[in-house]
Length: 487
Image (cartoon, rainbow, N blue to C red; front, side):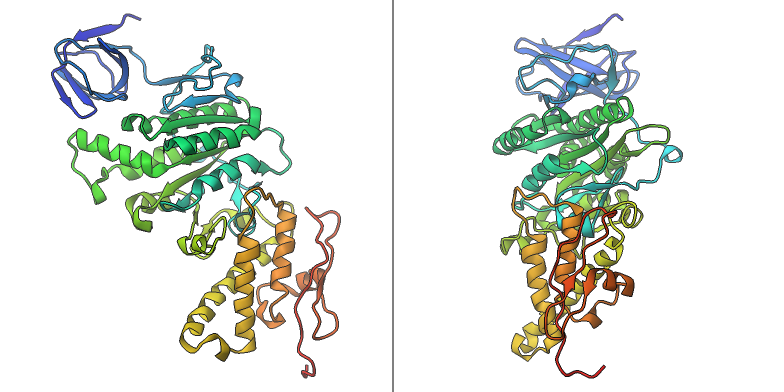
């Protein structure tokens, strides 16, 4: 195909250049802007019969309008795909970073892809073990789900992302891979990602767009990552977990591009099409009928000023199936990961947990933990008014439960990887410290199966689960009973 080249640029506005008299140029076509200093990549973002606007990824600094040339390549942004992308690291525009040379393949795909047809989707059900008790038990990640992490500046979301990427697994499946993309990340974070994620080896594909890279490149990075994930999932039949941090950086780049194009801003200056643009990313995840593989999406975004009503988390919440919210208060207490269970939820977990998926006691235990921790917040508010010494014995038991819940259950070491059986066992240990009449969401069958009452006033023990279950339950201590009470 013959290339079309034009000499001279008519107008420069931020990262946007305008050329007039350019017939036959297609929307989203790749453009090479050639200057004396080298070649810069761009794409056509607005076309008409008389002119075209080109978004230059490397920026327009130093461009000389009269001598610069624009070469239209007649194709969209593409990525070369083959099984050899596994274990490789790329920059924000899909160029190799690891020194192992380019990907040689006849298969090249448009990075823009397309959202999945809802009629072709299969309802997500299978459980993904992340190794974190708070996530696995209370806001379970399901294969094919879109479950964002809402964080804030200074919170350890990048460390959490590294640990999930390193230890996540789909129970019963060996063909599991991770696609990890850093968008607008600092150099020290990039170094941490590279070194820490090396343990994934050949089951990881890494994309990195650095904070000092041109801002406009951030718009392309998530699309390169998702296109690689689609290839691994639907061509190679793998189950892929996609982690992208930080979606807020992507949205800010989108806002900058929108301003450069002269578009009318919406809330907080973001473009009015922010919702549909985010949906074009999020809806590329899921399970397709007739395909062996799947894509599970775990986007991470920082909420400006910890404001969950900001357009980025607000629009994300409408599109995705739940959220994991990090708490600054828990982080100040030294809890890692500082996951706040009460505003967090997974809308798909109810159909991916329980017998045949995790363990039969999982739904009731999860519900009971939520109820008890919610009650803890009420007791804390009461204690601030009347003082802890004035509380009744049951209320004091709730406060003790809340402290242990945060200190030993939510809190984990940065190299600790708990399986679902271990997390459920810990749940029973915590619940057993409460009076039996507080356990209103657990069936008598589960109580009898997992908690064996002993002499009143002594702890109770937790029975071992049947061998057929996902994991055995260790002998645990359980609730005390008051002596001399009349039944």
